[in-house]
Image 1: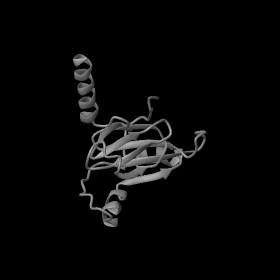
Image 2 (image 1 turned 120 degrees about the vertical axis):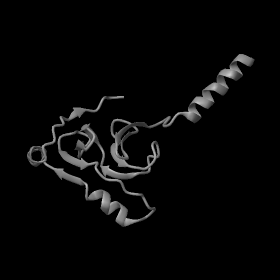
Image 3 (image 1 turned 180 degrees about the vertical axis):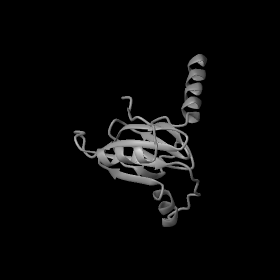
Length: 142
């Protein structure tokens, strides 16, 4: 019986200390996170804290492909569950901004560094023009 209590206590502590017990999150650098509840609710957020899931939405649901490096994030998002219509995004990570509650100027500063949505032709054209050498990779399924 004591062994079960100890295991239960360890399990509760692990759950409490785990960053995101119900959210899969990947740090993309520069306060950007790929936040995923499931295969539909997957978006890129700007947040000062990991695992907050309350950041500013940068790329809306559903991110299907993405890539990043020290300076850029590129992403592809589906407009529908069927995944037939897509939008493309380019995010310049070379800035920092303090998030102020209910402050439109904060959002405007962030949005100045977000290019998109684009169609695939314009996206490829901008990658070439900005010399961005990232290749989109599919998001791994849960």
